[in-house]
Length: 256
Image 1 (cartoon, rainbow, N blue to C red):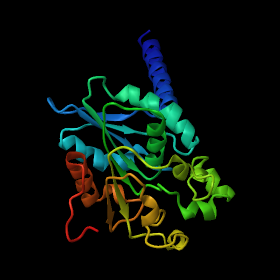
Image 2 (image 1 turned 60 degrees about the vertical axis):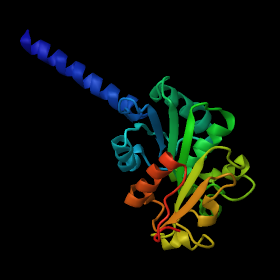
Image 3 (image 1 turned 180 degrees about the horizontal axis):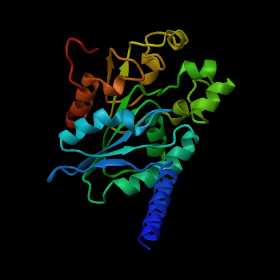
Image 4 (image 1 turned 120 degrees about the vertical axis):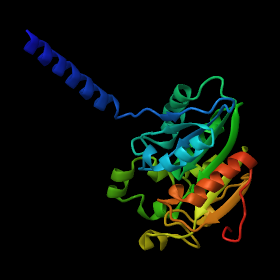
């Protein structure tokens, strides 16, 4: 009888693990909660074809400063920008931001900034604090103009990727200026010479310095980093926190 019980228990545990894995395909936010008396949250949104893991260094630094964090892992390669902004993101925000939060800030990387812009264009947030975007394609990117029609590009990056060009179908350009407190950090040291060759002027390997900017932004800074790794750099993290606290970046002789 005891053997049967052990078998039943194993089956039950196995079923639970399988269910967890399946349900985990649409991951939950990775959260930390603010220190007592410091009820501000920061929502982190990763870029295209990335995951919340890419934002963990930033999240840890924000948590040490006392911010509650919500590191959202969203299916960036499965849906359009409109669907991610209007269907997926609102549900995740409701689940991870408490009703008594005083202010809600956002830190985004790459396409995460466009998902947020689309959301804020159609939804008001009375508790909205500051936003920091890292290497956002705010005016699209020429990389999509060159590669967006190729099957393998679309297969790997999904429907949202083809919306990030610089032509008349560009969602970022269609969204227009911003009307919230926004600081933008972008890079100028590409590690992919092939993609960089497709982009006029200085770039981070995927987005030009010029196209990272947007009308209405509060501050803008270029750092010597590449697109895939800018969010992990110590100076990026320090500047992000400084902007959330002061509404501007901290300028030194090394920053431009």
